[in-house]
Structure formats: C-alpha cells, structure tokens
Image (cartoon, rainbow, N blue to C red; front, side, top):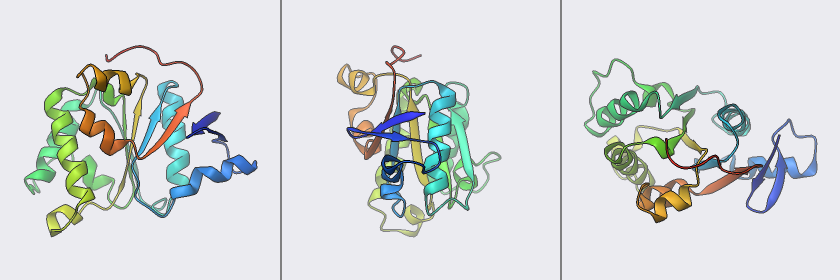
Length: 179
C-alpha cells in the first residue's frame, strides 16, 4: 500500500524502502494523525502500521467505526469529561498508553464532534490531572474530503485543525461526502 505524508509517497509495508522511514517521523510524539482516502481496511491497516512504529506500540490498539459506534464514542467522551468511572464500555481507557483509531469521523454528529474537540483541545493544553490522565495517541480516518466538509460547515473546522497535525493521504479519490 502506498500513502502520502505531505508530498512524500510512503510504503506502509515494513520498512523496506528509504521512503518508509518517513512513517515514524513522529514516533516519539503523541501527534494526532489524520488518514484520508482509501477504504476502511486500508485506513485501518495504515493506522496499525503507525501504531506499530510508535513508542506506544506495546499498548492496545482500539478501533471504533464512527458510523456504527458513535453512541459508544459519545458516552466515552462524556465519561472522560465528567471524570466518570462508571462507563461500562470505556474505549478511551482501553486505549490508554496505546492508540485510539476513529474511522469515518466525517459521519460524527455535531454534539459528538464538539465533545471530541473538547477532548483533543484539553489534552493539547493539559495542565490538570484530569486532562493528563489519558496518555494515548489519536488517529482518525475518513473516506470523505474533510476540508470540503469543514468548508461547508458539516464538519467542525476547529476539530479538523486539531486533528490534522500529521496527514496521511492514501492513493485514490475520496468516495464522496458524509454518510
């Protein structure tokens, strides 16, 4: 599989080419990664490759499909924001010291987008114990043109800005708008 990090083509197979060395360029950081294009399997494979190269590779890799599992994500974000320990299905805690991969984020409803934005921005400026307690990496995937969706107001522009710190563009065209 070939992806692009910035303008550089990168093989997501094991490091067999010089360009594959670009993949772990941020391996010791908790930089958010945005994977655009491709199909669900390609985005998941890319996220797993990034996780495998990261300093958090010994932690869990937790994958959520935002179309099917948005209520689960919304509950987890709400539990994190309220410091609730009674969540029966805590994907954020399962991904602690690992990677949380959220695929098809273009389908998130506005309230969940706002919760995710609060989660991401509080982590970025972590100054309290509550904000520091989640120590994982967030990777998001989308088959849609998030720039276009943010431009028309369907996807929160500040959320896109927070998530788009390292962009991996898979070869191929976008498959349309939000689901």
